[in-house]
Length: 115
Image (cartoon, rainbow, N blue to C red; front, side):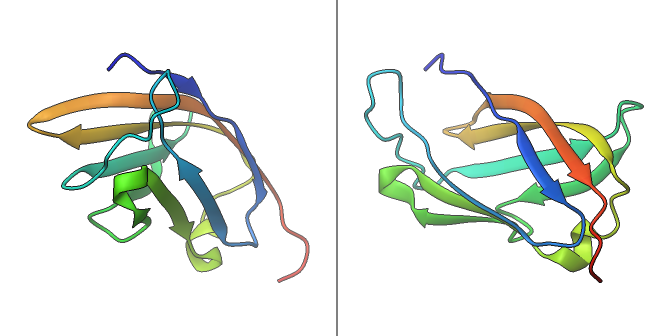
């Protein structure tokens, strides 16, 4: 599978990051995520991790693995630790002893006003 996407996310650091995705191949067939793990880091331009997000730490939840559906769930308490700015991220899929990068992109974090 040679699918590669660019995903840009815009949010404020005073809100939960909840975003659902449905992963499919280039023909639109859902990618079965059963027995797969997903991991994503948000990092600064200086390559320092700001937040680690994965199925292992519960911040990526497989909603319907057979249909390729998952959700990123990072609570506002964690997002508040990220200063405003533009960060890099990518998503890795590991299954059948193979790791593949699914997407890369930017996450733009603005300063939330309401605490």
